[in-house]
Amino acid sequence: MATSDEAAYTAPDTHIYADTTTTRSGWLTGGGTTGNERLTTTAGATLLILLVALGVTIIRIGGLLSEHLFIGMLLVPPVLLKMASTGYRFARYYTANPAYRRKGPPELALRALAPMVVLSTVVVFASGVALLFAGPSSRSTLFPIHKLSFFAWLAFMALHVLGHLPGMPAVLRADYGRSAGISSDVTGRAGRMLALGGALVAGVVLAVLVIPEFGPWVHNAGIFHHHH
Picture (tube, rainbow, N blue to C red):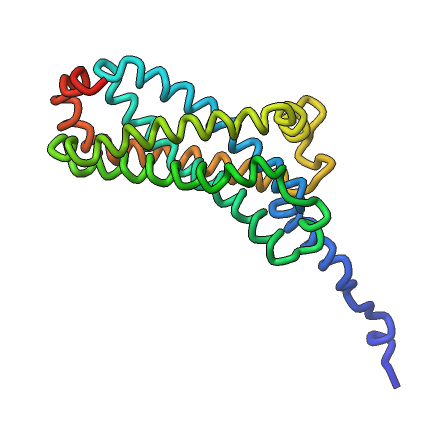
């Protein structure tokens, strides 16, 4: 027979703890297909701004070589974030995830373009990083690869951006407009902000760490007047 103390004891409501845990988890990682789309779009918009800055340094590469190298290294983590977000959607769709199947794949033209965007992105950044660490002595072998892959990447990226540009403003307003709060219509906004902020911070840290490698290139900046 239960004692009075035992009778008065009320077991903790495990559903409350479960709901709290779920809410906290959703606050960071929720959002589903819409959250994935918003992260991909925001990462893409951020890259677009940084790429404009990089383009300015290319126009005056002889005088802005240090800035070119810095921005190029800063771009690496955000580029990886964008590729990871896009790759996640690809994987979820082709492994028959119901939510991603319902959303459907991107338009056929964008799907056909995607492999070229990914391949040219990998080649242009890999060759750029290799150039930085190999030094000016590698310009005869690595620089042509970097230069040609850049122009190919620029063409594919222009088509990629044009394909996504019409829907970009609405997606950005949903997470970053005046009406968007931390608890917006789709969960996971805080996690998306942390992912993007973390990628940018990682990019700055990476760029700062490799500044000592800029020296040999800056001292030989005159070589670019012969290649551009």
